[in-house]
Amino acid sequence: MRTLARAAVTAAAVLLAIPNLGCESIGSVLDGLDRPSASIASARLSDLDTQSVTLDFDVEVLNPYAVPLPLTSLRYDLASSGAPFLTGEAPLSGSVPARGRQTVTLPARVAFNDLLATLSGVRPGQVVPYDAGLTLSVDAPGVGPIDLPLRRSGELPVPAPPAVSLASLEWEELSLTAARAV
Image 1 (cartoon, one colour):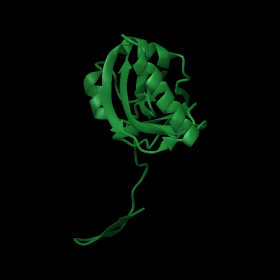
Image 2 (cartoon, helix red, strand yellow):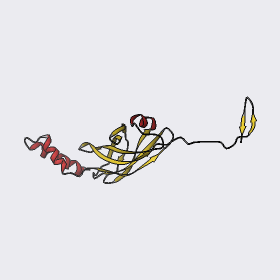
Image 3 (cartoon, helix red, strand yellow):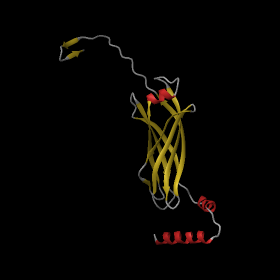
Image 4 (cartoon, one colour):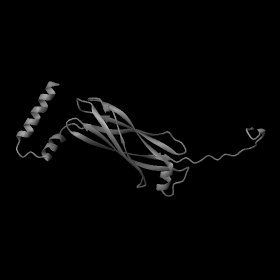
């Protein structure tokens, strides 16, 4: 830990001693450092019901730093054929271990009423293609906030209510307080 502190103080002294070193130059020094990265490992549907569906994006985050990398937020936008139908931001907690990788599940809940209202021509029973733009934000130690942009395409099924018919009905009990049929 002392070695890391000495290295940080030495680097700061060198940067301060160089005349006319602006923010652009400091940024170019930081560009040479390894940066955290993220990739979408998979996407799946979960919590499907008649009202909504959740898209779970499994994102693998790689931390090249010797200290844990805190996750701060997720911004997302979903579109179909160029028409956006869901935008949002969710706070995240936790961190990626030092010099490690971790898979984080990022959920996006899609309400079918919103989807049908936004995208004209979509009807229950159809499959809707989607494009997802995700931005995972991390707080890199010594560097500050870093946005990791991600993209994924897939399909969303919009469930149709089932058709139900009775072949026969036989009442076993029918009164003001109960009804039983087979």
